[in-house]
Length: 588
Image (cartoon, rainbow, N blue to C red):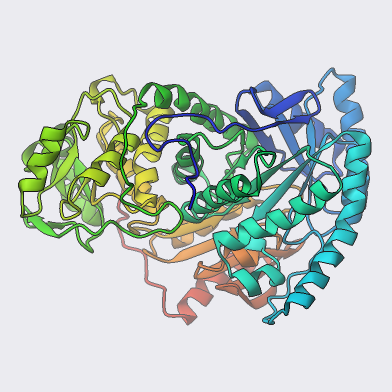
């Protein structure tokens, strides 16, 4: 299969055509754009205007607004008018699910329409059915008939389009032919792109969103290859995002892993960080990810090597297990957590309290060979060692840790376990959001490609935060589950309850359930699909009413919101996954 990027070692941004969204250009020679979405009811004009202005004030370049009905879509006219009255000309995007007529109305007032191929012309029923080629062709003809009027209107009004595939809402047609896979996500988008191109419409871009960073990364890589295969004029821009990332540090880490892994390889022309928080908090994270690319470009180098991993299908690198200070590392063991001697000393008095979250190995006290993978002599020395040993990049190298570790994994024998580092210059690291982004990208990107038997975070100076960051990266990458896992969507005008306060309540009641995955969804747009690998789901079914799911199957309906958290706890008990919270919660 053709490579998805110019080089896995040297940064080069993917060359695309420009897509115009109002006054803003996406792709081409334009900078990577940072955008977000307001969270209030679209019918509340004053709140919509205020939230839009608040976003623009903190650097948001494109603002998305949900249009769940024709009535909501019509009110975009008033929002646009009020923004213009105060001198705000930020491009507006209408977010459309299920309602082609709402898209037609919204296109009268906004600069761009976002459609979801999984539900623009389909109603998801989770039906199992075998399609003959003729039946499949009939379905595509039906989609073309539904989609064509919108494309013609976009051409007439010179508007933009995002074909935004979501892993959680693939159509039954796609699911039955391709499964719930990155390949299915790509084909879902291409079906709509072919219709647009047939009508000579090209002012569009793609997105491939998932709450699972591995799935999201694979889908964008596969899309890039598919576009190249279609031809040089399929060079459409990409909108990056991890959907339902959650809140707090977890949401920032998961977003940084997914978005940053693609940015560092030159993919992506506009990004949206989806947090279950007020949307103004998304912009600093997005801007920090874009700024990270300055560091990434400086750390580039040229190399020729066959990658040790398949970029399109996750498989863990097959290292051999060894024992270091009674700790097993490598093989099928989960990635171990190293800390510096300074961090270990600071946390030592609290070791008993830390329990499963205690540091496992100390960097300075652990036998490890640190090398420059570009040095043939150092690589040959590792080839000569027949017993597995721990290997890492050498500190002080002027290379990007992801590129360097890719080369290391490609050149050394697979038997040697690899330790991943967030930075090769810990003395120069400043921590905070910048350190979080760096650690999540440098370690998370490699974990999602199956590389890494242990991790070492040194870019965060606070000992407790440093240790917590390491464990949280492992959790977000799906490499080691040490606490409850949450899939929580960002709020929007479709949301049927207060997502932030509800998510906080659910976390307070369930955060001790190690290994249990809970989805918190504001509505049914992505709920059932994104919850496919969750154990339990809490989904808005109607105003003030909650539906509870086991996996993607609804089992309790129309529960009053005031009772829903307790009913969720009961459901977890019924399925044997409830344990009482410890008297003293573990805190790092």
